[in-house]
Image 1 (tube, rainbow, N blue to C red):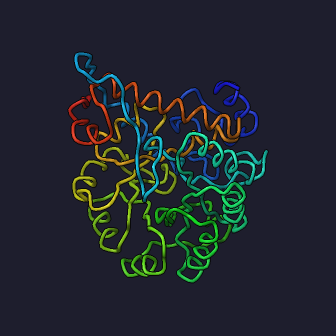
Image 2 (cartoon, rainbow, N blue to C red):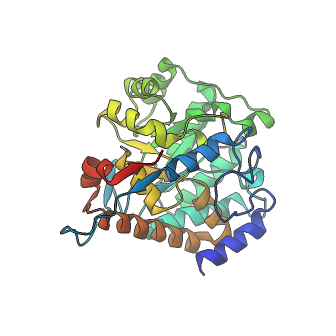
Image 3 (tube, helix red, strand yellow):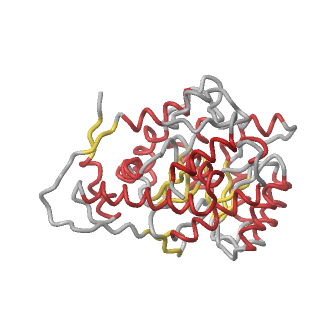
Length: 343
């Protein structure tokens, strides 16, 4: 199988909820929630992608870097690269309803295992989706990172208990889901979390705690104060607030403020290894990729997920070699000098 073949199969399975556009930029699907689009005008999804285009790289070829090391460690797990599939869930709701949730997430999980990265799995309006995701992790004996929606504390803790049976590496709460229309459509209420509620979640957990949906320095500091072991800079793929800022735009200030106290992960419009390079150069320790991993899992299962991940790794390594950067630490320290910001 090739990625192009997987893309064609994904188009057939996901239409009309995803057209598998030549460029996944949020234009054709704007406002299509449920579906794969961004909320309202789609501006937040579109802005995520456009902001990345406005950053270019300085080509450097006179240096002694002959190979680039992508090895990354998170919570004691050594990964082949600082890239993970984001917790995208809900085939029946958002992705065409042509396959089961378990078959979809199995492609994500097994493809991730083949390339040595950690899969993230998600929660949904339907508890059965979370149960399916967790059961696949258990069946494949694969350590992953489940993310739970910001339900009321009683329900949230019950779902944490469910997730813990999969022996997770860490557990996250995607607090940005408080604005997710697909949950409200199906009659479920989720709300923002107070500092005290986040502290209570941290106290309840026995594994590292990840807070996803951070878009300001102030909230990054609150998450750290709450005891988060990592944060994810994310606007939920542009699906929760119209006209939000692009994640790449807010990332540098957040990373500077956090100053290494906890890992800073980020997502938003990443489509290539060069995009990954830009995020890492601007302060992210690792990135999450959502729609592409989901699309390829639907179009070609574990084989397509593996192919896409290897493509990302090859492109990231190529960007590092042609900017004179030998490893992730150097990229973190010197990467910004390899970037040019177009006006």
